[in-house]
Image (cartoon, rainbow, N blue to C red; front, side, top):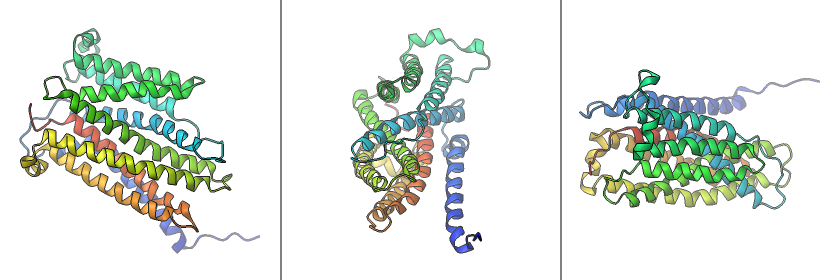
Length: 331
């Protein structure tokens, strides 16, 4: 028996895709560390203490919200497919909840020191968190991730959807202080934006994990059907994300100042970068949708879908950076 080695022509595309994904993952990892310095360069805006660390913690927190939400979403889609394999990939929800708990605890410690980086444990006044709005929201997120972890390990892991919803609500309220004009409107927009983004990014990630799990046993085409069902729902999620994002931007940047602030402020520059990344994601999603329509090989859509997940990771990091930068308009 002879073994044939793949030729250079057949091996190169797979290697190229792997390298591209690794580059995107590296970029997503560097955004929290280098992003604040690049965004603030030349704007004249003051650098908030510990903005890099806050960005890292918020990136972990957002990712920890996306992963279990995506698992619940993908599992719900799978149940809508008759004849689909019953096998599911191993849940990452407990690990995500643990990471989210630690990130939320780190953010709470910053709030407990007056949004300053603590130099020692003695600087942290956790008791004072109960006295401020931001402190209460920070404690709420810590407790919600702890509850989500316990639910994920229970016999009814679907119940973790409730504490995850609490995290989303807390983030929406935190992003819009009571001193802002119509804070409830802003919180409502942010809540829809965060929930749809978590389902979009986390859902695609878990759908691809499910397809990989089904690979050897999927003889009914359930994998392509699951990816197609996700694509239809994702189109609605993208529309909601775009609408709420544009509305939120116009609330913070009046139409006659948007173009200037997109290049002259750190918040605007980061927002512009996020818009460009989302545009790349939309193009990749369109390519995946076209490939999914191929009768001969619908699962060829997995290749651009994997790249889409990697770019979505960068979007999550940029979104976390946005929350740590100064808002250009003061209400």
